[in-house]
Length: 330
Ligand SMILES: NC(=O)c1ccc[n+]([C@@H]2O[C@H](COP(=O)([O-])OP(=O)(O)OC[C@H]3O[C@@H](n4cnc5c(N)ncnc54)[C@H](OP(=O)(O)O)[C@@H]3O)[C@@H](O)[C@H]2O)c1
Image (cartoon, rainbow, N blue to C red; front, side, top):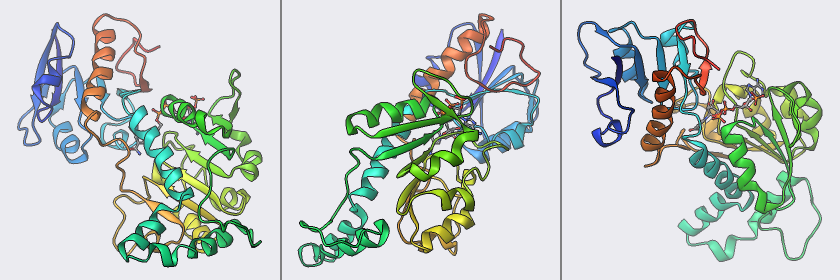
């Protein structure tokens, strides 16, 4: 019988949804001795994963509960087959992305500060100054520009996988002008290959990054790419911090050239004295985009489907690292 290890803190009600015909082995962070298992459901928890891995023997298949597995590869190596919980975090991460864009375009952090200082009515026209500085539009408008619209904006979406497609669906009612980029080009809808990125950046009023961190995507957005963006462009990173060159981002934010909404940073966690904290035009959350009540049940649902395919000898669908340990890889 297939032996499947899982983090012992996952509630039994979820674990009971895994397919029949497997033996389930709870794995604690204080594990001792050697434990032989065939497949390992990995916690979204670095310390647990590091502590457990050194005790495991015979693992052929790793099933991650997260979408990104970049943090896992340095621990387990490149030979083992790794699947992610594809699809499990689409809704939460896409909702964070749209909310972060609206937060920035509606100047919510500024208005929240005014609310806290009880100055909302008196001081609200200060938002015009912010609008002029970041947009470069110094004309006098009536009414004064106190926020911006998402409707009609030119959005460049880099990463058109499970989450990217959900972001595109949520953007539809805003009638944005959407340009899609992925690793490989395709049609219906048109998806540009990443090697065309630099030619697309000058039009991007909003740049959304939702692609995996790999050797190729590390620093995909560097000083050159940031300089190609139009004045006041918004860079939204819900993917992984190192996809953007942080030093270049800090310089660009301080120069008042662009703005950014980040759920992820490089490094993570961000040290207290890191220059990002003090950057203007930055909205930052601490890697929370998918951390809600649906995380575990949806991840288990995705893993359960993949595990069923494995048990039945069918091709796996969520392989992120095709190692040498499993042959049924699509
Ligand atoms: N902030 C959070 O809490 C959070 C939550 C969930 C996920 N994430 C991050 O989001 C990432 C994407 O998740 P997903 O589920 O959408 O992944 P996915 O379904 O595997 O899709 C990845 C997309 O990125 C594209 N891509 C891969 N390498 C690329 C490159 N070098 N340049 C341009 N595009 C590239 C792929 O292109 P092709 O379509 O051509 O293959 C695909 O469209 C994850 O890897 C994870 O790091 C973050």
